[in-house]
Image (cartoon, rainbow, N blue to C red; front, side, top):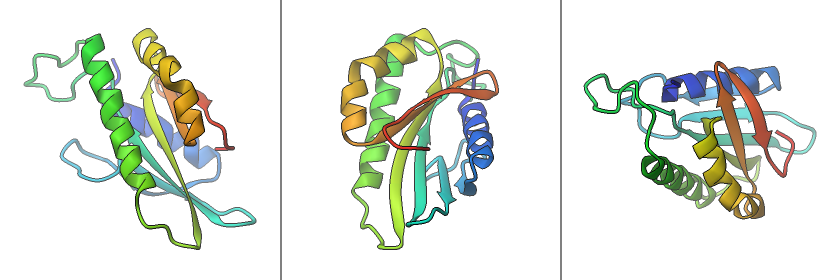
Length: 147
């Protein structure tokens, strides 16, 4: 079972291998703000990538869901919350020196994939990338832009 911080660790490692520098990342569950903020310099403009993440079980050891997979209804709510977080990012005032990109990072399992497949055209239409994480690695990235 992947905790949210496991998903974040895998995404950060993958991004660093792709040449990104991690500016900020959630390191504990009581963190507020974006789960990952990374930057990458390219020939045109620097990219600022804002990522919202979720695990597949509760990280709270006192929770009834601790160590148990989230139910389908909970997964749907979590994905909705991730999308709200990306909408907040897309609504931020933009600075000319950065190109802003958004993504969500989720466990690579049947239920998460099923919900993402239902909204894949929408995600593509507003350029939200999806990082799927299996074990300790990013297993796939779905994106209309080069991550």
